[in-house]
Image (tube, rainbow over all chains, first blue to last red; front, side):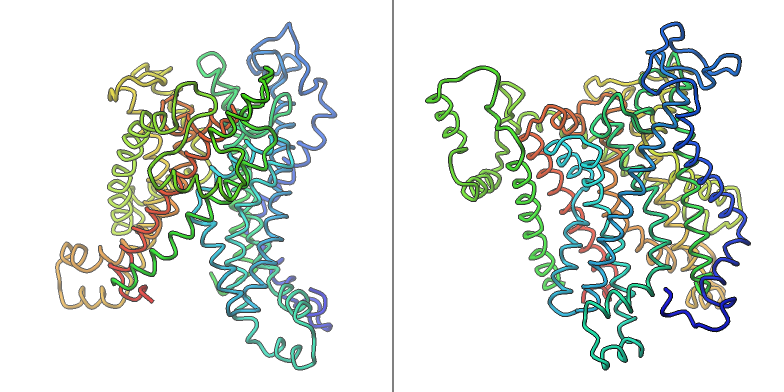
Length: 291
Length: 306
């Protein structure tokens, strides 16, 4: 928020303070490092490893994990390398997570800031819609959406977006309600700044800390929803894969090849865990009065 | 209280109508009609079929007809299961889902409240650490991982219980799915109960009760328990929504012939009427649960009747 930070004393800007506080939080920093590593591995890994995610190795069906051959994490029942598939699945899961979070946060911020700033009947109607969306069992509608529209990657993103923006909208609306009473907003109004510019240039930048925290905790919940859809066979389709698909396939092979379940599940859980810790750390860093 | 109930009902009905409307629009914007098939049907027959199911009417009329059907408790016919109406399919699946879900919710409410209260009363004890661990575990080990792990431990490893299936409400087949659903809910409920009880126990009026020398059990049961339960009541609504997710997953892991399997198979087969009927049915149930929760909350806490 360049226009709002005081020009002098850059060392003491709120963002710098937050950064200092964040760096002291070991758990959050560890989580961040872990997430960066996982993301980098998922992006680069599949190019470096000797196997393709969809190529079958007929001499190595359901091979157990070992370091003595090239399949470090073993193979599945059609001889596909599990490590490459986990990384490839991670690519898809993380991509769905980040893309969906971006769209749903954007929608939530616009919705909440508009409702909060305009108030009155507009606010009533907009928040009533949010209430209605809350009461709907979202997974069912997401299932319905993929049933009707198909199971393309972007449709999965769309289906999850449609039901993950309401929390942000509520949060942003609440903050906007208190921000619009502030003197700087009143000053902007007195100077004749138009309503859209007040909302998006003066109010929204002040919400960025909150939104950042919220985005961090939305990513794991979106990844989880995608995994559930894929686990039920209604999300990402073969031969493409995601962590949900891998866990589903692993659960079918439990009695003979438990590692097919445990390794992808471990990757998913550690990622979710790190996102939650990162979110906690960011909240503590950006909102010191909350501690 | 009566006025509040009435106002609350007035919001519920449009919610349902909007949901059904949106779902309806979605279904009709979908490519391919129910009678488009590889087999060539004479045009006259096609027209007859269309008019039998009112598919030749304008959409708004179809929507009203569907609502009228719904009001009479008729969910229509399945497009995929021959000779089955949606009502019959639901009739055979609903008791199974209700038995498992009902048992799990009852168990998790009792266990969750008890564990949460104990954790709050004996902070930093074994129970407290257990509840905290369960809470953080529940948020990162999702149901679709925990379920297969339970199967791995108790069905494949120890061979105590069947790994899935269903046999006329036989308890053997119910233990694992009910435990899975209970575990998931308990982790949330216990954490919330703990947090709210800790807050209540630190409040001024509890300190007063302690100061005047009231014995501990009287403080807990007469003064602390009821206000601590308020957040638990609020969470029942969202819990009902998330239970649907875990029910879908549970039924699919243990191949239980409940509503979840119907939804998943209906979606996979593009059985539009079946999915529509199920969405309407389940949404109605969730909306009614939310209504009950709100009314109960208003009953427990007069301040919220605004």
